[in-house]
Length: 142
Image (cartoon, rainbow, N blue to C red; front, side, top):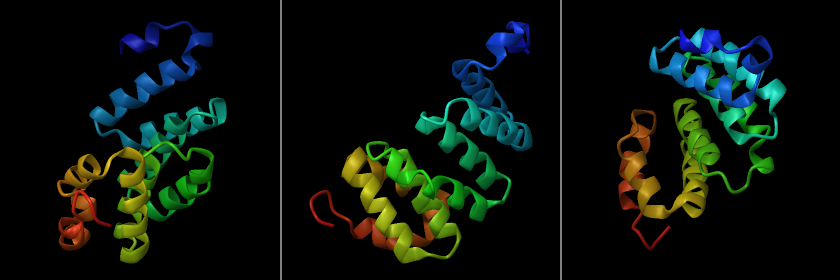
């Protein structure tokens, strides 16, 4: 991998780790992606993306409860990032917490735009159990 040529100190730069995570995710190498995500959280805990990537890898490894726990623990630290409540909606739905999932989805809509989040949610298999309710969420209503 081209990233392996990066100098040792630069290997731990958050941007390098983020790129490494993206490549691992593309290959669906979730165990390695989780390790990279955990390193990101240790090195750059102030970046929302660090937490999002760690949790996403956990979810892909069928460790959704851990993904939920990790992401919910920092949700208040990143109030302007719609991906966090969106992912919490996905995880909540998969954990059979439909009402909680719908609340998180509505939060994501407030931050990221109702219609764009709604459209994305209607194509997301993790949210399929909520599709009937999501379809009822108009561009103006709740």
